[in-house]
Length: 116
Image (tube, rainbow, N blue to C red; front, side, top):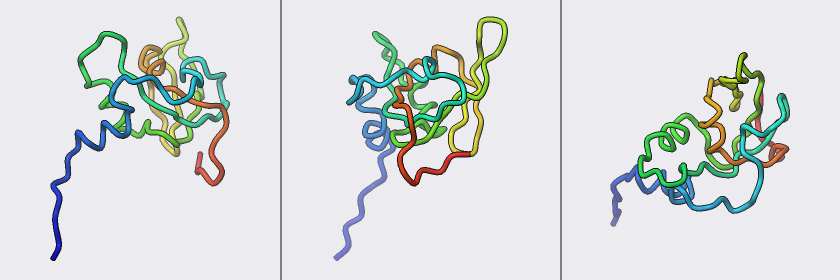
């Protein structure tokens, strides 16, 4: 007999974002602190302190900022060094500095990871 379970996007997102605000497993760096053109691996996406709105974390997770993904900053805008042009896999996104600060990374990419 087969048992079907309903797909629950909230459960998937909770797993991928470390319960929306729990501290990352490793200290790492924030993405906005990563030197330009240095590849890193996403560790976690954390919620801003004191915020109860999950939309920003949800958006970052939906576009692919999940643990294990390869990422790098390819350019910073002028003036103010914003926005950041961020390469995630084979796609480039523009992030504001405060958005990039929510993404925790570790320098280097996992073996076998694809990066553009």
